[in-house]
Length: 152
Image 1 (cartoon, rainbow, N blue to C red):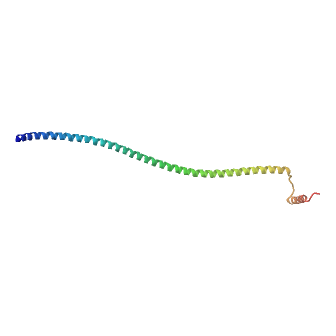
Image 2: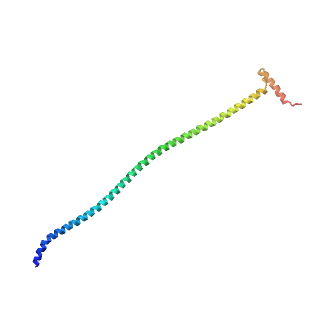
Image 3: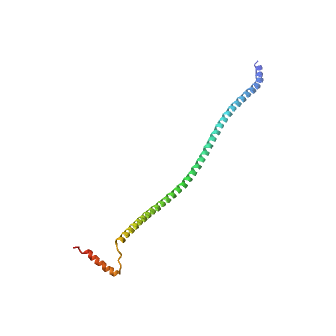
């Protein structure tokens, strides 16, 4: 009987093996499908991370370009500012000189006016003497002696 069982097992064995192989293939397919889903999910996450990294790189590049532009604009404005400081200093010096000159001219005009007033007053109080230089000198010495003598 033992021999009879063996041939039956041998007959069942290839079918059993085939069924078992099919089950193994199904299990492998399920495992691979789940692995594939996991890998696809991981790949999707990596793609998102790569996209974010690319966006960050792009943002960094744009920021660096903006910084470079602003530094260039800063340098240009600084040069303009320095030139304006020099210009303002020169303007201040010219304005100061002009003010000093203007005050001097005003003082000279006041002095001229005062001298003209003094001249008018002197002209009213003095008489013009006629005669030659030597005659006037002689008269001048007489007047001087007259002033020096004490009055009695």
